[in-house]
Amino acid sequence: MATKLQTDVEAAVESLLQNLPPGVKVDVNFTPDGAITFTVQQTKEQILKEKYGHLLGKKLSLTEAAKKYNVPRGTLLSWVYYTNYLSPVDSDAYPKLFNEAEVAYLVDIYEERRRVGSKALLVDDDGLPYEFKHPNLAEYRRNKKN
Image (cartoon, rainbow, N blue to C red; front, side, top):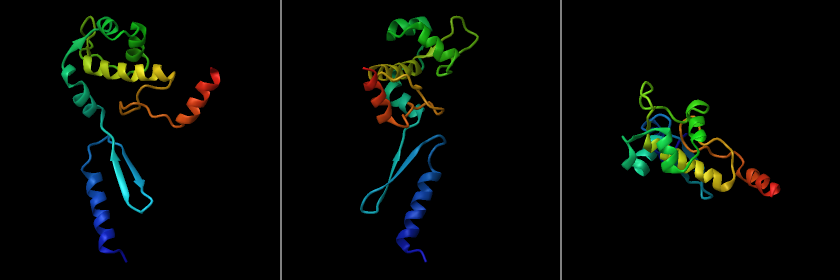
């Protein structure tokens, strides 16, 4: 038979999970004293609004983005045509224009990956920075090369 506390906890968890927007990732952890903690990751839209809000609505071409963010134009092209990280705001326009907030977001992730020497995916299917499954293994392999 469930205790009142157990029932209250189950109701609170159910309510939390039902009120989250689609695509949100929740990490559930158990502390040594038996407590349950939840960490809710931000969505891509929340990150863009919070960190790159001043760039939302601004548009720029790939050439302008390459110059402004000091990223090879070929890298930006691959984000559009091969990995589909970037989509043009208006696909009929010439030159194609992109949301500057999304470009800045990807460039920040790209620079972080270059700094650590990783060639892993930049973002996952939800547009969030790709999390390494075995970060220690990747670090070990990078150090072994050097």
